[in-house]
Image (cartoon, rainbow, N blue to C red; front, side):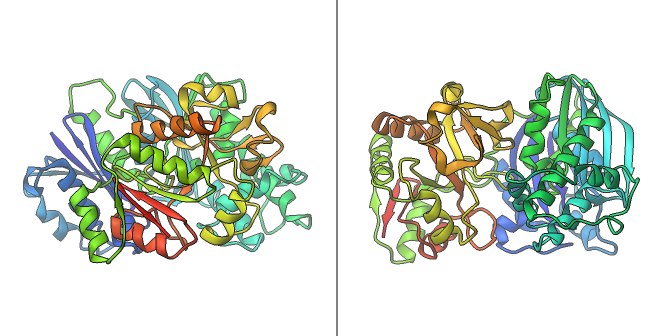
Length: 491
């Protein structure tokens, strides 16, 4: 059975493919086309999913469409490409809920979906039992946690629906003196316009963050397990607060929590509705995008008339990368399948050594071109992560934050947000064997099996996808070297 999911058509369009109970592919349209086009049918993403699944459009059995869809769109005509497929339309927040719960390890959970607005809803609470979801509470616009966070983002002089993550990290350095006021707004007791906030920017950010955490905890109650999706679920500090509340046994935040994730949620919902299997589909890895062969990479490098070194043996590839990192060089690392979602999990990453005292400054100033206060994730092998950090299970997908242990604070100060707070990325051999191997190789040489990791993208673009995307970003930045497949390029 082949199920094609389509979601996020009004913003962050994506496609996903489930084949006989396995997620074969998932990719965002903007990563392929390198531009965001609202209301556009994700033709490139669909074609990529079918290609990765090894099927043609006529072999698709179900097309699962996550609403909302643009009025008068060309969607019906586009769907004629799937002559054998049954079409299923799924509510926006139902698709969000399915993307979280049906991809989680839990057989029962409270599921919370929060975003700016979708199908008139801006949030909902669901009860998950077995493979079924039941709506328990809906939150209607304009009582929107996502929109309020966006308005605070604008209040702080940033761009709503783009810079909320900057408000989140700013909040780690502030005092939540206005938390009660923001809580009243979230609960519909006060309007945003009637409130006055005159304090420091960090205090306003911290107040919004603290109020959001309290609001979600109220929705979650004493649920044993909690699942999160919708754009608000990208808030790693929120996920950490739930993990550390002491009230919940398990917490799962969908890594592709935004509109793109509804493509996956829609496909998951249809699979569990029509199949006789109760087994969960998701295996946890979000490396679901395109990959490229050695010949394809080589052809791109030669067409760009670049000088490169071929390193066929994996041990030699590791040794070359470690050599560069040990000499304080910043290395772009492109391997295997592109990640689904906004976070680089070791396949489309820019890496730096924590031993380099200037790594954070160099990454921010000469590569990312952003404020110096921004920090980077610390990737560590999962099986030894507890030696260096206190963190939750969502560190697997960079969806939470942790705390660095006191004896390593000085060595990892370049990644610390505030106090001992740090973004932790735990890497298992099963999820990403090559990146896991690199971390161990670096640890053997340096004594610290940790690398600073940020996404391989520039200028507000999505993650690089193709070798050509990688070459463009490499030569448009201060990155020192690039390892793409078995090829090494140095400046």
